[in-house]
Image 1: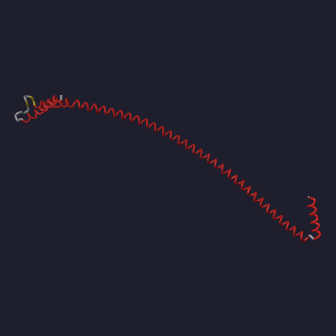
Image 2 (image 1 turned 135 degrees about the horizontal axis):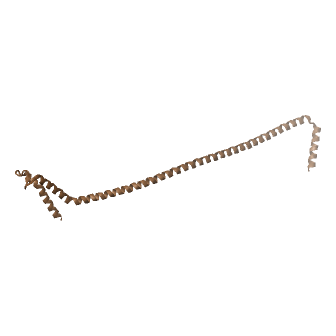
Image 3 (image 1 turned 180 degrees about the vertical axis):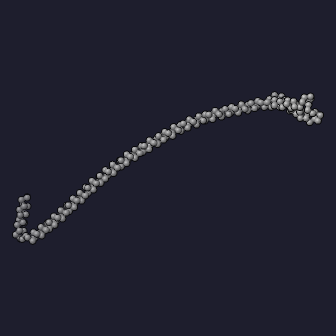
Length: 191
């Protein structure tokens, strides 16, 4: 089959080159073998184009068919990729909106918890302040009681000292004897 193609190719090259030989001959003129040169050129062109179609038609058809199939496959892949991208974009949009909702919920909960914590801390501070007021009041009462006790003791000591001083000045030996006897009688009665 290849040798047949080679033969046709050689014949075509000879036929194609014959007008060139004819043009080189000085006596040929406008005709070759009684046929005008323009007709030979047209026939030559038709023969070359026919041979090109004959020999290159099948490979070109195969190449362009394969190229068409590749392009169709690339187009189909691009459509699938575009559909996947659209689906992913829709998923991402859904996820983003869900994340935004969750963030708003978290913010709301954070604000609510913050307000509750603030109220709790204020209540705790109020309770602590009240406890400190009561503790301070108790401590003040204790200090006042202690001061009163010391003041009473000091007053008692002063009064006793004054009474002793008055008694020393006004008391004589008879009064002392009488007091001693009354004390002894009081002790004897209490037994």
